[in-house]
Length: 445
Image (cartoon, rainbow, N blue to C red; front, side, top):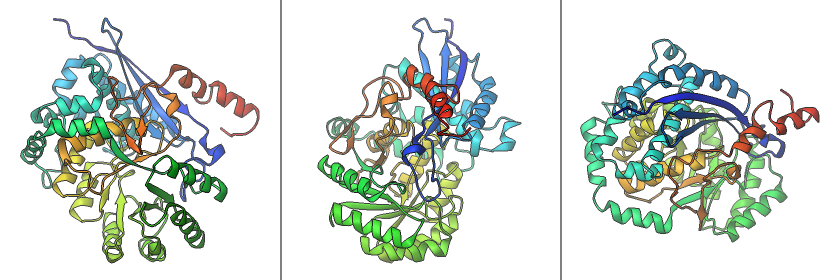
């Protein structure tokens, strides 16, 4: 029998000018243009099936990720798809440990973002071949199959293959019950869309009012630029959402360690559940210090959207440096590496609350968190997934939110396929939208 091969890889720089409306703005990223390095894998399958993947960026720099994807393509094009998925651990290691490219990584930064884009497309292709949404593909895999997709190198002091297998075997118990619960009720979400730092008060008030009417009960506020303004904005939002709804804070790496502690203590009166990314995302011991200092106030530390690999997550968990773990579907090495982090979080009994603020991140990470509940954590205690309401209209299979919850996708694949017309219009810098903005001198390139 002739094996189907991956015959081509294309990658496109797609950017949306979100900075014009201050969407996505925070204390560190004041003018983000939500963007993606968008990958399409072509095959010689008779049905013309393709795989679609992406990694999320903020505008400038996307062209660098595109170059890295092209550099990785030599490991993908010409390969038999069956050979990839039958030795997925080996394929992951081949991509992430290219003997020359790893020098500008390894397993971090631009190369890992590019790896995620390629692997996300491979997983989309696999799920489509099985005619299942990605979360269902994962749920239906045996524990042995799942473990075979994970590279355990550098993390066996925190999680062995045997421990991972046991967790997944336990996850098979009453799995059908949890799957039916998800299909009926969805996975609880929180909104970040109401309180971007660049939004004026009137816009913030309107968005909060609308969100409350739609049933949202969990809200995240961007902080970190000015303490007195943070106090004012947090009071405004807490007064609007009431004492019983959940409030979270996000500083996007703005502060020093001691500054984080003193600043958040000033905001403790507003009863935040967590402070997210208070300091450098690489400062594990700094996060541990902040966690210990804020514990008496009932405020946890959340981080992970810029945690670069499973090794760093291992150390965050070992150091008790976070109370809420935020996986990202594009920062880590796709599903393969996220599986290892979900399993480590389960072993250390830390709830996973994914990052999903960006192009396609909601579409992607919903699959991972639904799988986590059904097959790994088996719990919704202190768990929720981020949601932002931007740019879903550009995807073929956008997220479905009901009663402030992610409803499990039913279409085959990883929900990563973008509408061709959107890719064409927002391709940078030649797309129609960008050509118009450049001509009007509303943007610089």
